[in-house]
Length: 240
View 1 (cartoon, rainbow, N blue to C red):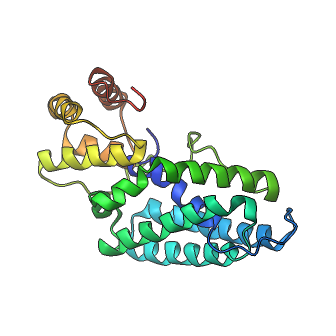
View 2: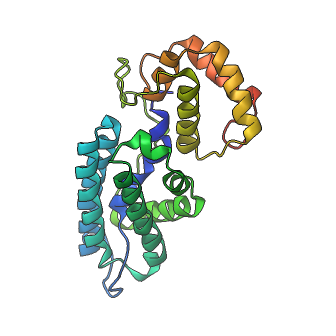
């Protein structure tokens, strides 16, 4: 796991911000050189900045980057074509809720993950479907290529840099770790799975090990194997 668990799902959100949505004029011929695509490409750039800010976990950077990305998205939304209106409205509404959740938690991404409304938004399948639809449209119509988030080799430092601080209390750290997993994977653990995972991970991993997995740096093969076995044995892998 080279990408921080918290960002496995959140990584889609900056692009969704960039994708835009809202009111539409509905009359423009849309193509790669259209006004809509031009604004979408500008929003794509600010979306990249938002993704980078989320990677830092720095509240000030997150606030500035996501606020800018949403403003760019809303500008493009004003001329969103008719055939993508429903998707863009869903996406931008989600982004406004995302920002509201972060603001409620002082732009602390780890604190926000513990926010039930925020976590529900991240795991909202209808939001993901709208994001996927919009991604496909922008790639086909505007020529805005979509990155494969599964191909993260070389994109995340493996120097052990800490981005997300887990609690010093081992039990609280386990709860945070599992919250991050749920958000990152879009999986809602059952009480039985959660208990199973905590029992398995408690004996095998230290808080420092959990933090290394969350932050994607310096994860040993032993730790990776222990985590994988725990999730498999507890039937808690995505789609499992």
